[in-house]
Length: 140
Image 1 (spheres, one colour):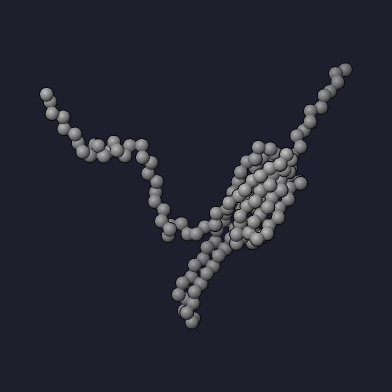
Image 2 (tube, rainbow, N blue to C red; image 1 turned 90 degrees about the vertical axis):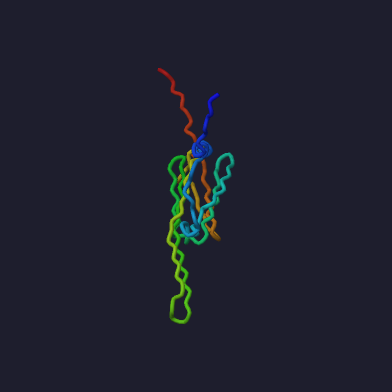
């Protein structure tokens, strides 16, 4: 019989086959960025969207609607500075943009859509566009 020697490093390679390696993220790599969370509900003729945009001024919120697609974006600025006397001990600034886009099953009527922003929550009322009814033509 022949002796078969196994290479231990080859076994390690086999162990890691199929393992997806992703870069590690450390807290210092990703400062506290606002994340937009949304809720979408619907009735027979309307979609209701609630989007959390805490700390984003109303004038910095943009909503665009094109057919089935809805995009919400906002820009925020946060500055924090700690002083002891006149000496600045720590200064942190964040300027960022959050956005979220999604596609709805029905086309949205842009003309009748409404947006309301209160207490960090954007509420959208998005009526479904009436489907065009087919018209039968009489043949002469």
